[in-house]
Picture 1 (cartoon, rainbow, N blue to C red):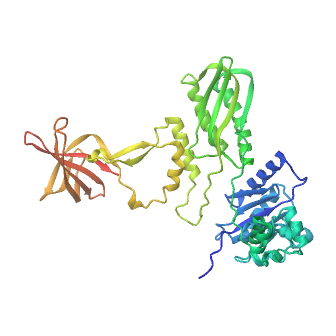
Picture 2: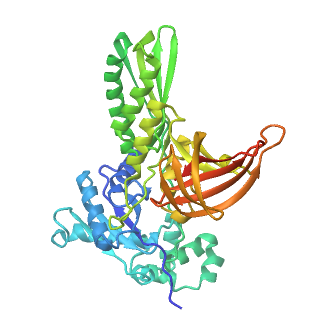
Picture 3: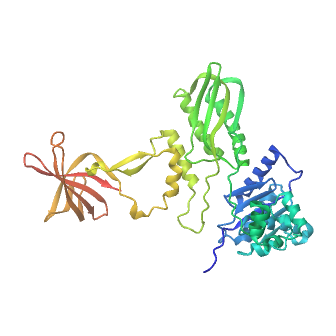
Length: 466
């Protein structure tokens, strides 16, 4: 049986100068993680100078070497120095490879890529233990006390720890000894953790002169959004809901803008906020009270909702563009203006289909799942006419074969039915035979034949399916 290797991990190591601490260290980590989005949407900030990247998805884009160069150039373009990139099966090996690559590049600058000023070290799949064995103990994430104890026992290399029996290290050092043994053997089950984000961003600007019309507010809004989107971009986040607070002498009036999918696109957020302000101003275009201060707050933020696509797949499209269009429609026309088809259980065919307003919170899921549902599994959506249209139908035996009247003239090439239904005698006493028929042009329409109490038999066109 062939061994299945874990997902590949790339680690990027940079040189923070000066060494950051506290809030400065957190900002440095976020800045590095945001820059590395150029290579992968999945980033984990490990330390102020170290970040891990999901290395999958580069098979058709030049492989892991191309990913490493992309990460190098992104980091160098953002002003980072001392760049080293390591790729391996497990984080411990990828981290060590990145440090080794940075050290090698610094010791021999001519061997490194002069354009990016860093080195690359790629560990072959399944080779984590062999790669780690000759490295010093500093390659393992050990506490200072445990590392000093290992050196006192004569351990100089990672391989010295890996060669010891695991029960011996566990008996002597407990769980930390067993963990060190697993890491030395290239067994590392650490996973990506979401980067901790600061408080909800907020920007505000006080107007020199109170304004009761939109133009001055829109100018201020554009300035505030530029600042907020820059802050969101630096921390690798997107706005899922914005709140506008209009402060006047008599109080605060609020308006909200909700994109269909979390985003930090300034133009889209501006359009949504502008529409919210226009609703607050009303048809007259004037606010009820002059606004003295405009406060913009991202009341809900999330990590980027990014899905890596394959440019060689024909169905590829930009889901954010579709979400932007939906957001603008909902803001301009109302949240109930954008609908999607659904089905429900009912004995009457005309009541089985319905249009349901799309909730803003699930628009992204609807877009993501659109390509995953096989076309044959999508139910047809019935469009009912406001009132059944009387038509003339020619039959071939018991099957409808031709239709004419106000709906035009159509030959019917296939028919399914009849489906006999009766209404409730105390409210709607009807007796009908329904047929689903296909026209020569390929349209699927719905006919019924109704028997009236007088004995009259009439045909009606009730609707069609998409």
